View 1: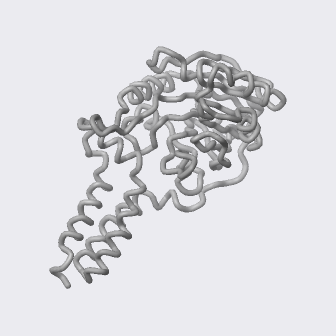
View 2: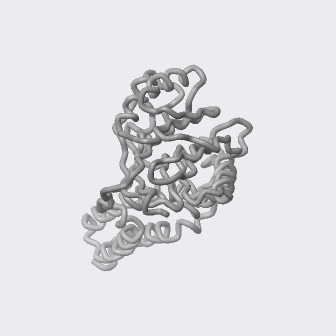
View 3: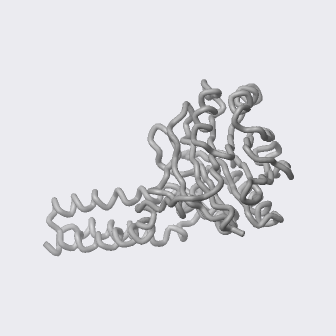
Length: 309
């Protein structure tokens, strides 16, 4: 019983090391570290697989070794499992990568607005679709700003509007100050460059990483003490390459959501690459919205500006 399943025990220990030391997996080769961190919660699925194999082999050694990855996974993610949503709040925000090939932009706009959001951020806007989104949202949102492929619609006045340079050569990020009844905040809408997994080059994320650093610098220098970031960051909170942003902001899903809140791909969500993040603002609740024709799920959050004074 003790000599059986030594290979399984070694795999269990290796899995525990990957989970515990994921930040030490180097990015030098194919951005392997960032790739593993993007799907880090899913490594937990290997635990029941190893458990079944250990039971089949009747290996006490493997069963005991499995305690290690289970303990590490729970330490990393058990805090995300309970429902952390609360009541109250005074500002509801939503963000959605609508997909440039969306066949029903008007319906998508109405679906996101149905969340009751006071602020709606849309990414991957095309020049031909912008008038459709504007028309569909005009009756609900008096104020709007569209720059490049991103836009922000608001029930409250917007000021200080300016594009944000994320080192792409065209506009995929914008900043505005919203003056809500219970306070004002700088709101950023951003769509960081896409990433790809290729056999010959691995996880191609260099341009996204540079844009994330530029976005982080812009946020760190913002004069407003309340900052809200809405958008498709093409990365998760675990991805070290987004540290320029994540080190100074917190995810509303992690603070006030329920579960992991995966947003992509919409057909079978595996990662939360769409983010609502805050600095100097108290998140109250966070959730995903029903699927639209896009390949991303829209997400929303309720914030408390008044208590952030």
